[in-house]
Image 1 (tube, rainbow, N blue to C red):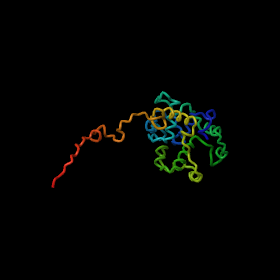
Image 2 (cartoon, one colour; image 1 turned 120 degrees about the vertical axis):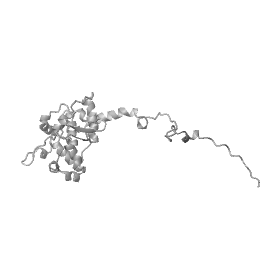
Image 3 (cartoon, rainbow, N blue to C red; image 1 turned 180 degrees about the horizontal axis):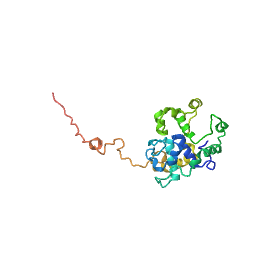
Image 4 (spheres, one colour; image 1 turned 135 degrees about the vertical axis):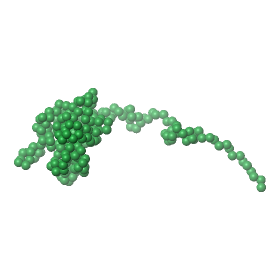
Length: 245
């Protein structure tokens, strides 16, 4: 609901940032410092140099997150400046109350989420890490896979973030791919794919006009003359030889 919210209720840059935090497990301070140069735009590796633990780390982004970030990059940083913030215009110092306001604006109206008790606090932006860890445990990711992304150094600390994994499994709940959940991102990806389709040649994009050379069935024909049946020497005809006994 949050990712599909109307752009006036929840600006696109916030939904992209929330999707990144939910699916990759970064701290909000790390996302604040993330720039275009943090992403390898060829293989989808995300690298962090400066972070809370001062231990540089890197990992391969979720495929849906990588597709989302590539589409978002063309919107927010079409010049591809390496120093450009990955999530510009996000007010990070007020992210917690903004996160709650955006949840309400998106139609999340479960009173239990927002009630305050002695053993329970209202949703915080930092809870996105709990969502990530819970989703990772739901998907049976191992501890090392999770800590590569979160930067946790101990299992007890990691366990404090885990929430209702068993309930997720019992209800069959699972996170939606973010590149499909955000309407503007999904539309941008569809437009890019449609524009690239006619140039692909063949298939559904149009008829294949490539000339047939006869070498498709034998890729070595152009390199080895003896494999081309048209170049094989022709044997002389066999004469009818009758043997007299």
